[in-house]
Image (cartoon, rainbow, N blue to C red; front, side, top):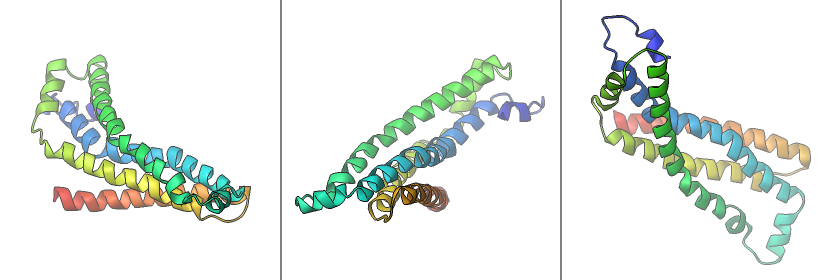
Amino acid sequence: QTALNITSPIIPKYLVGFATRQSIILEFAATFISIIMAGKVGSFITSSIGTMRVTEQIDALEVMGINAINYLVFPKFIALMLYPFVISIAMFLGIIGGMAACIYGGFSTLDDYITGVQLDFIPFHITYAFIKTIVFAFILATIPSYHGFFMKGGALEVGKASTTAFVWTSVVIILLNYILTQLLLS
């Protein structure tokens, strides 16, 4: 999409690779995938814990002397520790996909694209992306778990809790994205 906007002969062809790298590493990989995961994983976490609340399985765990929060929520945190690996794969595949689209679309050559990807590379941007990823993984585990664990009602409320968890998780991710960007890149 960037290549179509910079087809002027004055603009160097390697800027397609530069723009692809910057957009994927700084925003697309960490932020957009986190919002997508909020919809998929967050809704699943909320609905599974919420269903356990509705069917009184959480009460049964507490009667048996099992700490329900540790038993149900802590594994979600452990699972989301793999989230930075998912984001690193997304970064790699995004840059490779941009290269394939650029070359096969006839917008640039492989050498120009690789030159653009390497141009003005700042290693801290990778660190910045992983800091955001770790913060977003924490948000993806806490907000949906909270909404599922403390919901009341029946099956209809489970759906409402899932929707509410998605909305709150997305809003918090966007706000934290802004705050982290201002703190780390200013």
